[in-house]
Image (cartoon, rainbow, N blue to C red; front, side, top):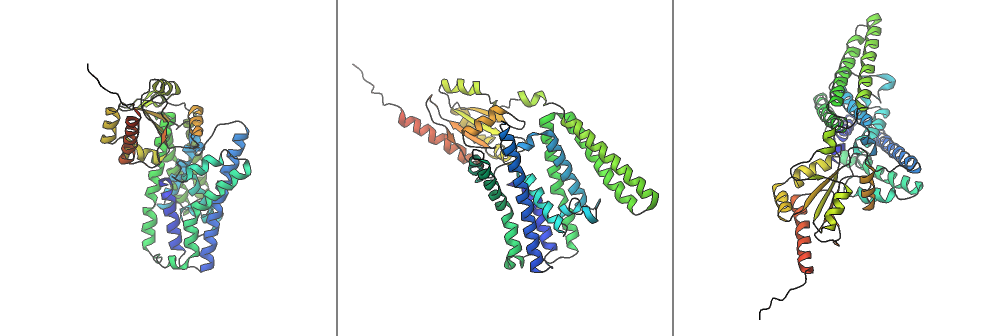
Length: 403
């Protein structure tokens, strides 16, 4: 999943820094990182079980439908970036929560990197996850928890294998001064992730919310700088600096909370692009009763795979021309914010999250065709072409006669 790449890059940097340690120590780090991933997946499973028991309709990545959660993750990505850039470093007992997330060598750092990897992995489902998640959400709590723990083990497995296989570790470069530059470079994927999340927040709560979130990031940066700058002075100045930094951080959180409470902008609900229309069940039913072909795209602003598919495949000139030539109506369902109708529709196709792509060929009784989660223009065009050929073969042969 592309969402998790920034955090995995941090773990790779951590592995390089640990390459001079004993094999037993490296293995312990691998196990603790895996424990962090598994604990996070277990927590997600428990939350889903509790929400289901309360009658809620939820799916994978449901937490990103909360503007407050999106904002807090954006702040976390930004803070980790500041730490990698060297703006601040919390030592001692909070190393795992602060700079420990940024590839420090402590056990707490390995554990919380696993937690962070899980958080940023959940906006999208990987191609082979969809069936597992769809199955899990229809099962009793014990089976659901087992499936989630299996998924967590799969996420942690590459790093776990690297930590337990000495042959692979020989390919890692030796620690050196170059690592400081690499660590600083790793800050920029974190900043990019923060920018993406602020964009998601703007889609959820409007431009004013995004402005408040950006102002909060300025305060977070000021707080981190002030805390570090006053550490070297000591005495009363250090205490005053810490209090001022804490106050700036509280202002950032208060402003962020205010931003998250803003309602969804009207443009998110009514936006119509040149080649698609907003999804609703009435439009779909009308189009199906008329026997017209329909292409459904269920997406979310926080789903990177969805955005890539739209840019690479669904916005491709050949695909747009094919939709127009065949009279295909393109409907897009936006799951950025919670939508029980879309959640129910996803469940009908055995899915618990986005993306979901469904094509209804022409004809009132045509069966829907579900496309893969990773699209290319050729995949979309071949699906449309196959449906057209099948419809042509199904047409009865008419005999022309003249007298």
